[in-house]
Length: 390
Image (cartoon, rainbow, N blue to C red; front, side):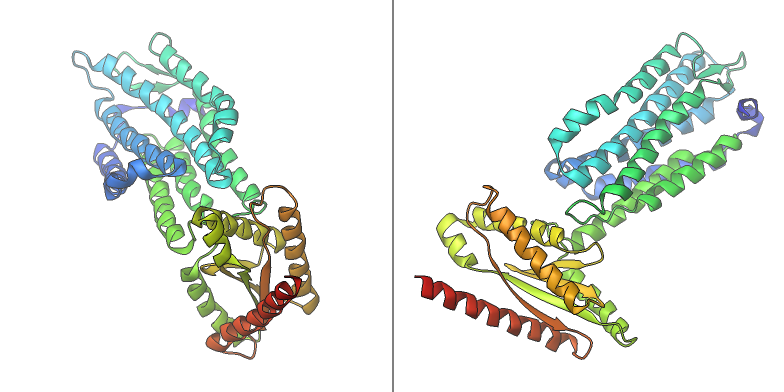
């Protein structure tokens, strides 16, 4: 099979290569320049993403140069071709490694975890880069014939295994952990990887066209568009859905309710939240809100929608929720609250008041009005109990 992949200068469609890689370069430049002023302020996952874009841009340029010079014979072309193809191999593995780091930080949000685990995970990419440098002196991954045409060597399969091993591991990790962690993410893993895999397979068996890096640029562009979507639908403090998403979801709910699907809503409010802010400061208040967000995620099912409605109010929405299931969610919330309050992490004990309503027989306005009314009735009883204690 590797013999079928050897190059021939007669098969290179240079105009098609330049158009495809030119598109990839344009896409990466659009992304990089769109947020140039904000790059220094980005969290680690954003910085990793933009380094992936920079590397993809360089790879599109390098591959175009490699195809343009393939089979050419002039002074100095041979070392240039060796250098270009060596850089492509090294940057290829680096981009794949950064993808895994990006996914991991997106899931766990831990710089310490990245430093601890991914120093070891970088070993395959490091070895591959070292072998690529050795290719300058010995034909390891590729060779140049006497006419300066590129020839793939059998060990190039190792480079493919390392690169696509990273890519696949990142995809598996994202699909597995995002259902288990107490946060929402919108990573379109399939949308990112399918263009890359498709372009790779086509280029693997069809020499003379360039699809891998333009398809990678397309995948990164889809990821970028999704990041914009994510920013508009996620609350930055709690990482729950925000009110924008709630409006979007309620439009969907309104359509479903006409088909007889019942939606149950639970509105929750942090008791004494103003007092917490006034006594301990707004940083402590923010910590309480983040803790409540995690508590609500742990207390609910995967298919349940949890929204930061505004301020210290939260909304839980679930389809076709039976009465006992609703009660189980509320019991779970109380258990999680008790566990958090007794863990020693809480600066101040947290308690919540909750109100429930069903959308089946109500319009959107009355649905939220009924949840709000029910919640404040429970809050009134809570404060009455507090007054009696004092």
